[in-house]
Image (cartoon, rainbow, N blue to C red):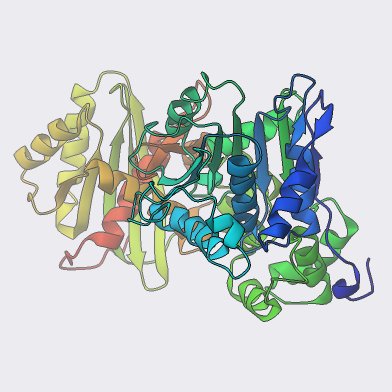
Amino acid sequence: MISQPVALLGEARPRVLVEPRGVRANSWEDVADLSATAGITLDGWQETILRSAMGERADRTWAAKRVGVTVPRQNGKSQLLVARALAGALLFGEKKIVVSAHQQDTAREAFSKLLEIIESDGNEWLRKRLDMRFGKSGIYNAFNREAIGFTNGARIQFKARSGAGGKGFSSDCLMLDEAQILGSRAWTSINSTMSAMPNPQVWLLGTAPQLEDDSETFESVRAAAIGGKSTSAAWCEWGADVDSVEYAAAKADLAARQWSPAVEYLCWSANPAWNTRMNVEVVQGECETYSTEKFGQDRLGLWPSETGKGSRLISSTEWSDTAVGEPPADGVRSFGVAFSADGKRASVGGSVKHADGFHVELVDEFSGEMTSGISSLAAWLAERWRETAQITVSGRSHADTLRQALIDEGVSKTVIRVASTQEYLTACAMTHNAIVEREVTHLDSEGQKLLDESVAVSDKKVRSRDGGWGWEATTADGDETPLEAVSLALFGSKTSTRRPGRKSKVRVL
């Protein structure tokens, strides 16, 4: 274990550093020199990234067609981004450089930083390079149209990805900030626009993905670089090493949300600007208030596979930690019914809202011919609806059929809710959050084996443009409907304003 103060350790090295093959020359020092002339003092870790990214082959094309950078927040990615964009415009003959983020507000932050540099004292030489015929004095400052033009014809544009598809992203250098939320559809569309460029370079800069992020693209680029599948990629990653003795020493403190020298060392190792830009007291507050998992990803740079999540959104530990031997003695119940997309499977879940939180169980699961099953289910629910807060149904295949069968059985329409797509997505996210925060329990019983198996094979699948996701089985024989059913039941417990006349005093799930 390192015993001296982290202030004496200097700057942390990258945990992962992958460089492209075939490098014959390197232009990174040119970027650093230009940056220094413009008043941008690059840190050592930023120069390390440039050294990996700016190598050239014998034919003077970039050796790294893709450059991946992952480092926790507030270390200085935007400064690196601005330095590379400025060098592209003034040194490398790149006529169009696009700086993109998920939202325009973030892209505008980079624009503002470059504008501040241009307007700084001593940078009159830089202002003379602006094309006065472009915008107002070489600058477009309108929201969603931010851009800077230079007398050599180069343009740096700042764009949001949200809702833009692949329009306007064709460029010599494309810098994609917030790459951990770069959806696969947007990546496919954007990347295809670069295929006709003679010497393109794409940068993907981001942080370790959060559980709710659509991070498939970032993960695939990372895997290809680290696994050696890509010969034309650079990958630079900072984060704590979960296999180190230092991490083992800090593990108990992390679990207890306790700031300690061991935790501070991990933070230093994951944040290259720890001794220059980080406010230690703020990070200490993060350690004491964030969940262990969120602190690990947000500040220690740990990817989901390193926090025990793998490709499964609900870890085995999280699921087992919320198991109980007995259901609550009383409470207000709700039911959820989920039909598979092909209409061949269905599951029924139950939820009880009680004094200490919520409890869910799988009530039934069936497959095959649905007509008789729906009739029997409607009759079963009809016997219980008066003491039920809500019956939530999802699945285009049979949801409306079940709703009508319930009405025919005398169930009040006010109790039945056919979930919209957004409500279904909300139910899934709500359930995941309730499990992570230990707000919900489930029964540890052989009779709940199908629900346990559903949780084990289900992962999130993004189903809306704003990142909303639902459950999907990750194996050919897996079934997500049990998990969907209890999610819908929990959604009913959390959102229904109906208060049945009496509480359930017997186990009804």
